[in-house]
Length: 86
Image 1 (cartoon, rainbow, N blue to C red):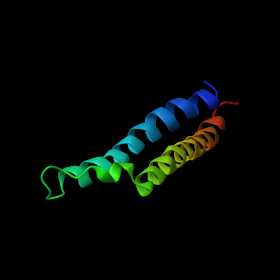
Image 2 (cartoon, helix red, strand yellow):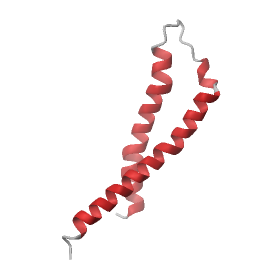
Image 3 (cartoon, rainbow, N blue to C red):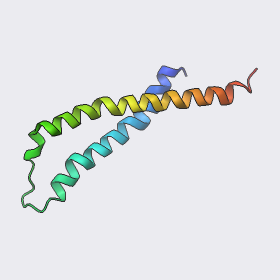
Image 4 (cartoon, one colour):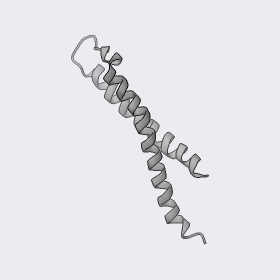
């Protein structure tokens, strides 16, 4: 399969995308909008600098975390299964 395809499939699509989107949505959309006792919900924070910095950080940090996870898993499996194939 190759590491590049493995990193995209396992690290980015399998980990970073679902985890990053879930955490981002819960942290920045669900909790502030649905659990704030204001009626109607206050969505003005969506245009704040803090919101956009956190969003941009998520777009960078989650893919890096996914790539690191894929690299770790690849190295671990190479050591584990590489010794049995000689």
